[in-house]
Image (cartoon, rainbow, N blue to C red; front, side):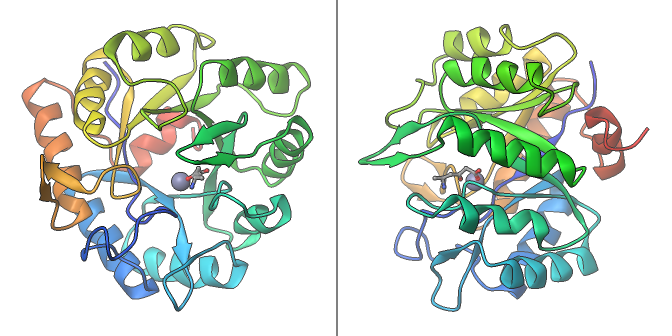
Length: 273
Ligand code: KMH
Ligand code: ZN
């Protein structure tokens, strides 16, 4: 089986210091956390950033500053969020892809989904605009699917030439309002993408671990981090994101799957040849 790519999503847009005191917020904190996670086996950094008050922002300048600090410390693949936070405008969200030449990947959510008590809006014209902009910048999209129908939307983008094969998917599972996070849900999604595609899974809350283990076994890849889950075990907060990465690396080793370094991940994803 191909080596395992571990993505870490250490910040997110929804988690607060009230939820966990260990959340990295400043550029220095995020860069330090990225460094620890890279050492633990993460090769992709799924990046959200915060303003001086700790609120989510898609500011080009803030992304630039954070990415510069991260790149001083690690060679991780930087994957910027274009999802941002619920309620941001499409133009606001898309700033991240123009922030720094080191951006190699960007998320592309392929549909609208209920998101707790909010709605994460991604209209068809907006999805197409995002896909076009990402492809024009020669950035690899990570197609985020919160629902099975989003795979179909991605296939329509492919037909229109707005994204290119091989596609890479991220199944975000267990969001209240999106697809559930049972083993059969992951099997369904992973079996319904074009052959030759790669996929990773981001299980929300307690599903981060169970779906991560399934992905190791099925030949997929794994995302962990405070964006999706702040606990190490039930009721016990993880002290940092690296603890969550370390556990996946350890489980992968136990299960006979080697963990990819950033350049190996780039090859698997077709970022380099
Ligand atoms: N914060 C969520 C509403 C992405 O990074 O592209 C959207 C999100 C997806 O986190
Ligand atoms: Zn995100």
